[in-house]
Length: 214
Image (cartoon, rainbow, N blue to C red):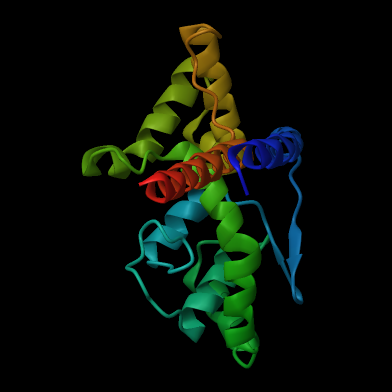
């Protein structure tokens, strides 16, 4: 494949990626529960994220150690916290765990990684700067709540109940309004991924051609 073929493929992939980003931008305003096997999962809100972080869920990826293998307890924690009827009450969580104790938890661990973890990565990538300092990483929720409360007058409870993807969409809109459309940075998950892969492939192709010339 030469540079022209690579660019042609890039343009096609970028068009499809932009279509997906457009769909995603509208979907964030729809509060829809999604099926996972025989369970239903609610949207990932700020509060649900914080509860998953407190139990050190390996499915978050951002706060878990590398190569951590999830346990049955991890799977049940995730399914309960993400359940539409989740309540932060120990007795309710215990009943849920006992009722579903004999599920095929290894199967569900795989389903969570495949269907949910990737979506979480996309939502959290826009909300957190992976290259920032540890203090920024630990304070991103407080900063988001502060920004939403000061700009929109929402209560802490209203903000904690917002799906992360929707909260980030509001923060992006606020940034564009305060900074001006010209200076605002727009996060496009699918398109940015395609651009990254194109640059990576183009760099490898150029190196290959240089080696051939040498």
